[in-house]
Amino acid sequence: MNIENARFNMIEQQIRPWKVLDQQVLDLMATLPREKFVPDAYQGLAFADIAIPLGKDRFMLHPREEGRLLQAVKPSFSDKVLVLGANSGYITALLASMAGEVTAIDSDEDFVSLASENLASSNIKNVNIKLGDASMGLETEAPYDVIVITGSMQILPESIKQQLAIGGRLFCIIGIAPTMEALVITRTGESKWDEDDLFETNVPALANSPVVEQFQF
Image 1: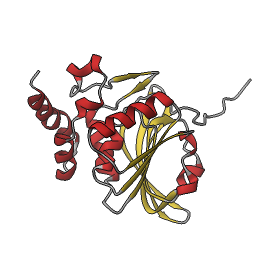
Image 2 (image 1 turned 90 degrees about the vertical axis):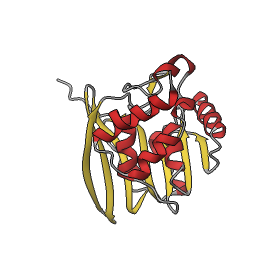
Image 3 (image 1 turned 135 degrees about the vertical axis):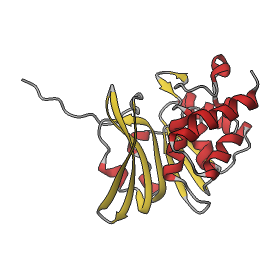
Image 4 (image 1 turned 135 degrees about the horizontal axis):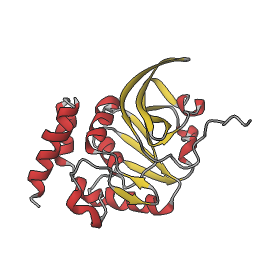
């Protein structure tokens, strides 16, 4: 496989046609080595239009979904970012390449180690990865300018929304399989949020995330 050709095709055939037109986002995804964050067994599919398995019912998002995510929240260098669910560290790496300070939380020690190793090998140093319950956010260090939740949730806890700064953007995937909606939520006031639909998808739930109560008859 010619890696540079595959990377170019990922940008031009998957990401750009999916309405990802921000040049800074496209340039970053063309230069940050996605293959470093993909398991060895899937190296040949590092740039394919699939959700790459990471083990333990975790997956990388499709490249086009990652592009839409990044374009929607687009942190600036002065922004403080929180990632809930570190996985292999790729989304964290993208965000950290644009933001000033990033904290990522994961409930699984293996993914904390994996993300830490992958970020270090990519020479990304402005990330603090912590072991903890990502479904709760990290209230002690709030507010955040950007919050990204990499796993799905049936409902978004109010406590996480409250950790967003006014003017901040939150990416989440809400719903129940097989149909879920990726959203970007912007906090416009103390008790006001705007919500925009980005795309439909289907990804595993974030560990310990709340579920909708089922009626019992």
